[in-house]
Image (cartoon, rainbow, N blue to C red; front, side, top):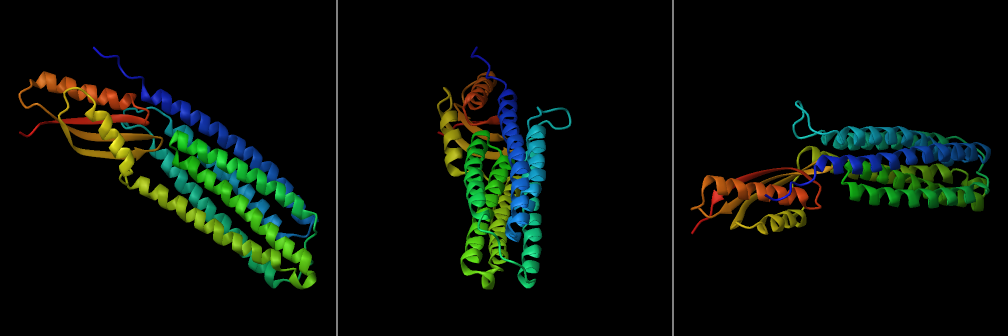
Length: 302
């Protein structure tokens, strides 16, 4: 008898734990940057920097949502959730997207108010502060994005986009403050206009996060390349003559596969059942984050 595949839910918990740990680090980073930005904005007379700091505060709540989603999604199947709790990751991503939209609304409202209200221009000392912020956020966003791909987590990918949007907001603030500093009092509202530009960037990122999470909630088809790889694994199993349907859907951190295999029609029911088990075991062993497989056996034609 072939060795049984490792429990896929153990690997899921490992990936979820690593992702959740990174999200907590991101929340801590956001807390520090929020304090630095808001203080710099107050003392440097730069509303766009205060708005950027406010977004970092909201980021802490989105990080908490992503963390909770990852932890919940890692729970193994139970009597009430036979396919596991993977959809919690998708729901967390949707919540993060709504948080991104809320941040955009907050910044946009404040930016319009600042543009319409006369105020003194920002101080040049806020520029090096923003340069450091942009560099740190871009670095952490890329690190989190890579972790999201490795874990197969939509929530972690959403959080990476949120971190990236924060970096772009700070970059827009840098441009706006530079214009205000160089242009003088006549261009004091440039930081407010920069905040509006940042709003557009944030909304665009939020829409992408929301669409991806919604697609997963609606069980969108897996990418063709992934389906092709799954079919290749199944076809390598001895006794499999061919394949018919292969349906793949994502459930949070994992994939669920429903596949139809073709075997020699003259085989006994027992032998066909054994081949089906071999296919299931091969797919669960494959490094594709598959947590559950349903195999249907059909007689090969001809």
